[in-house]
Amino acid sequence: MSQSSKHRRNRTARTATAAVTLLMAGALGAAGAGTSNAGTSGAAAKAAAPQTRQIASSVLGGDYKITLTALRSPEDELAASVRLQVFTQSGGAWKESDRVTVGDVDGWFWYPLTGKGAVCDFATASTEPAPLTVSLLVTPSIGCSDPVHYLVKEGRVYAD
Image (cartoon, rainbow, N blue to C red; front, side, top):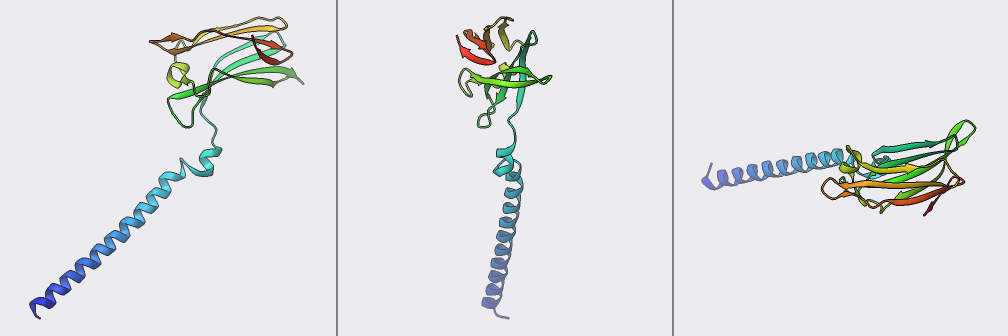
């Protein structure tokens, strides 16, 4: 066998090996990408509920139940929103009658909001209309937010 035919055969073998390696890498990469994306994107991720944590609750007589819930941002794991919900008694069960967002959507930090001392002020009264004051921890170094005042009247929340 001549030197040039050995060289051609080795080059062909190397080319074939490289092609197989590239095909395998592409197949494994596609399979890995499909697997890693399956849990974090697409319809399943959009349908998944955001992480939530109730941070305060109060029952005003038998008329109203008021809760504050932190909702972790789906776009930024450090950000959160705060949902204030009002529930009224209906057929022996609490039914949501109104909800508002306290502050801006994703305007809070998740960890301070769900940690110790997160609720600086959550004051309510059993009157009609029921006054409501909310102040939350922005960060330990910044401290508490300015208090926000609401009125709960006939199961609805109004800015005060």
